[in-house]
Length: 305
Image (tube, rainbow, N blue to C red; front, side):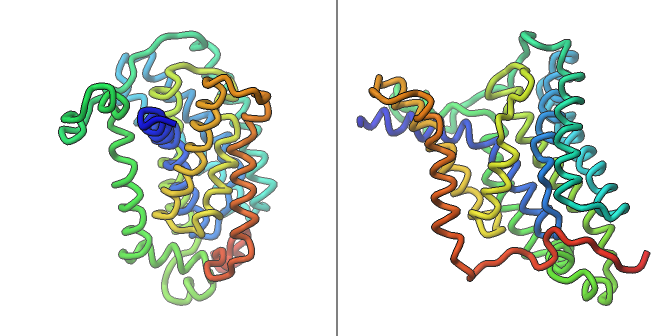
């Protein structure tokens, strides 16, 4: 494999993994507050279709990104009503949200199938621009890509260096203790869900407005479930999520390179490489108890109103 091929895989991994990393960071915040959202797939689809529709209507992709982020936050508010206010089962409510998202996104996106839009502008950082064109052209990215690592660092700072983050983690570990210390577990869970939903919306916006530049039903192709798996892979830590997203997206890019190289292996089998890799990593790390899930993850809070 040549240097150009290696850099091509890396560039493709960064490009395709950005939407996944934003989504994973959002789910890290949700799960740190004790909420597991299996409806992420529906959240992503509604956000992607909303962002694409707004971009098409206004001609401004930045407004589309904002609309997608707000749509993600609002979808998580629907989920929050089910599991925080109504004390619904998180797994069942998440699946209901996913199917709701399938239908709503199809309704929103139907008029925009095959519609062309303006994407976010792409540019090369000055340091990379000094490289030969055949290398530097591989790393011409948009603003959402350049912001994703700073956002991951910001989420880490938010969770581990602020009072709000301490409250989120406290609620995720023991809601009764958090309540006794003067915190409102329900309010904190709603806040965490809204922030997490907006981050997922950013990931969906990158997928539809930048990565594919089109809308198609079911275009997320299981990314919501992969994000949930990557939260476990990252041990509920936002900085480790960077590695997880790169590993998965790198596997996707690698199998595409193998198909383009004409390897005599079924393309259907090659398509399974990223998912097999995810399963292998989860199995290998599953026995490591040094970093466990938040104690209240998936549990209903039955405290005082």
